[in-house]
Length: 186
Image (cartoon, rainbow, N blue to C red):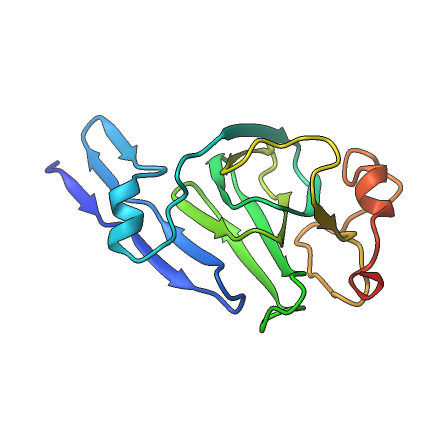
């Protein structure tokens, strides 16, 4: 097999400042190397580049589990390192031209989302073996930091979760996320 190089691409979404990114990948007989983040790659595509990533987290979430919707005062780059997830993004920023817009993105290895400050991020692990979800933050998370949360079970948002959530099952939705306010209550 010869070496195959897939270039990095980026597409805007219906939320102002939210970008779907496909990573650069180099594949040969041994496997694939992906660039999760490269400053020059983001800059060449006109994407905002944080001064630095201050914190990187990886979660493992069992199949059907939902995390979010959380919109902290930080920019995030998110994607999966293993498995698949259904990403959900909600613009809750006051004064935003796209406030209230909801975008969903099927997340597989190599597909990322650049999430601007104040846009809520959430996901559901859709792989039977769960997924490993990677977050890069441009600021360190701290308890009580500025931001907002919206329940992922908000009926007005009508999110079409691939695996129907059971609000009484803590393995699917945490009590904290289930009790978060509805978007209309913000």
